Image 1 (cartoon, protein in one colour):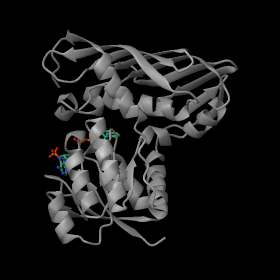
Image 2: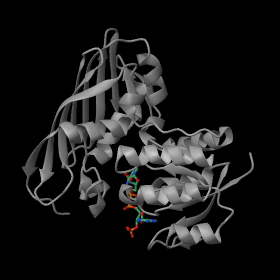
Image 3: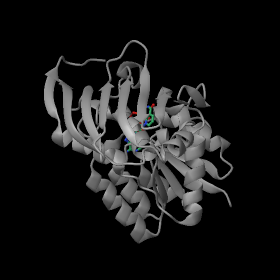
Image 4: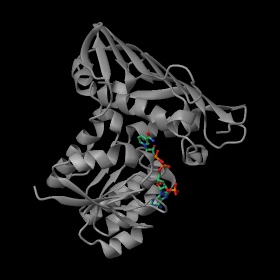
Length: 310
Ligand code: NAP
């Protein structure tokens, strides 16, 4: 496959922490430019907005959208209409309809749209999915508790409309569940805690059922200053699966099927997948995790909690 010139749009935390290194290591992609209102990373051509990239770097064939979700639709639409393949960081937008519109535009343009769910590329995920394939789920418990000040310092967009609040990490749990489970899930109740000065929830307690009626309890919290927890326990008719560290570690009946010290490698696999999709000319947009956030917001009982300040 010949090298594909790619630009990162939105050069913030995740672009710096993960995308740049994965692209530097990629045998397929060449990081040709970035687009960001402020960031001017050394050694890279930088543009302040996508229009300048489209005018001045015509060789760029693909873009990765690492902006906050609130601006993603407009930028992705512009890129697709200019004939670029588009990778969307999670969550893929601010509404389900936006993402479905992008799917249609990508189809009309004959370009690839890839909604990347990084947690689906965690080391333990293939083993977990394979083991669960022929099991009957009897109970699931999910605990996703982290400190927003530590992981998203000063990112006000998370608490602005469309930022999803605690669902920003919580959607990673949904993306794992919907990917590895052999059955569908639906939300039956939710309590959403909104800080009195913010527009998105800082915590959520959710009750779901599998389509076969097994209970699924999820506890998402952005106020965890103690040990950071991204765990799930899945009980089945033939044993139990424990996933921890966001999918880096998976135990089946207490035996490790994957045990990595970190989630590094997720983004290498994301870019390998993006390359494969481009080669095949196929889009991949899994809407299930995002739908569950929308359902929780529709169904959830809202309670007000104390104001949040960084
Ligand atoms: P961030 O640090 O706030 O970075 C976003 C960057 O996008 C900022 O530099 C921002 O510039 C820029 N930007 C805003 N509007 C833009 C536009 N129209 N065109 C180009 N650039 C624009 O946020 P982040 O943590 O990297 O998160 C970005 C996305 O990745 C989110 O959807 C998040 O859920 C996802 N993600 C984050 C993590 C993580 O650990 N942080 C992990 C996985 C996925 P200004 O700040 O100057 O506006």
